[in-house]
Length: 280
Image (cartoon, rainbow, N blue to C red):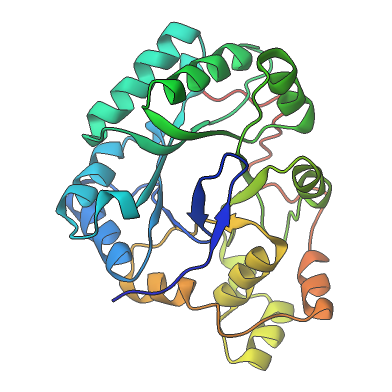
């Protein structure tokens, strides 16, 4: 089955679907079948990471599907322990070997690790990997504006996207506004939160009832109307299809404001503040 998902153009000219599949914990043969069902349902953007230990699973799904490789957009990410230039280059190569791919469409630095303070060095490795044809588009995750400004100041190259924690309990309004002003696409991780709480939220349920949609669909539509790419994770073919069936309705300004108004000062899921958090 093919579902038409709108696309967004990054600042380097690469286009990506506005919804992709998150693959955290999708591993082995079961993971391959989950990813294949997503592709059959119309997903074309698949998000992985070196630290998810499932790049091989993603690559096997790419190998098995009848969808041409050029029509798929595959993402992976560089872990914090490999920010030195030489290790970053080796890790990107290893990522490709694990997945048995010739290139990644998108490769991201997973966290800035500012205490370690080698993210500029890692960024230079991504720049070079793109020149070598190993990666088509390069970006970052969880970077604050000051981190991104430093990348551009020291290398002359700006990320195409920043994948950040973004959901109604943590709406990241100022960060999103900064991205928009600097022509960097926002991508949302954990767009539906990792908690049952939001899926039982009475406020969102009322909006969902008005549109005859599920709470998940309303939240993902909110992400879409914010201009963000979302990457919800689901192993269920039915839920996968539900998650991309959001283009036949829209939220009005009041509904968007209600969802954004659910944000909390302590809305981060795991208190992972990019200013101090170190990922290895």
